[in-house]
Amino acid sequence: MRDYGNMPKLEWRDDKSTLAKIKAQVMREEPVILVMPAGFDFSLDATACDGHEESGLLIDCKANRALSMLAEHNDAPNLQGIGNAANSAGLLVDINPAEGYLVIHD
Image 1 (cartoon, one colour):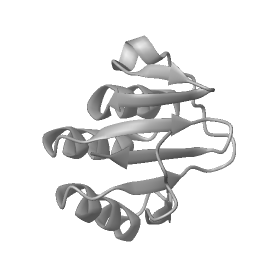
Image 2 (spheres, one colour):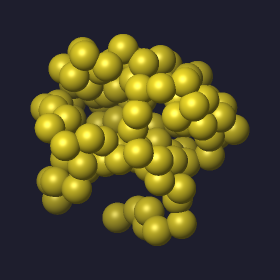
Image 3 (tube, helix red, strand yellow):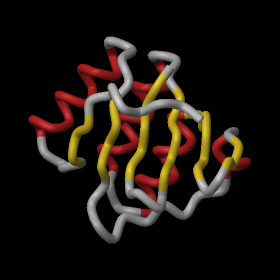
Image 4 (cartoon, rainbow, N blue to C red):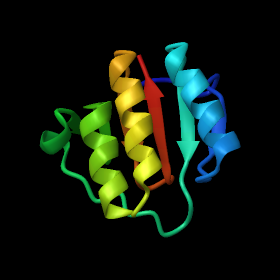
């Protein structure tokens, strides 16, 4: 299991400032934890995003596939843009529905 302790955390907000911070992290190929709002729908199958399930987490999902599906479920089109940027940077996504966050990492 990956250690997330030293990764920066950002609360997901669909505003220019937050999106710019997230994209900056992603484009520098640096990890970031996105803490999603209450009520966020994490419904996703590991095989649909080319990842695997481990102890209730979805691990090493393709960023563009996972974030595109989550963007659609949650009416959050800017999340899809983050997924595309992360994919271009060669990053993956871990999803922790129980704790309510996404981890974009290498």
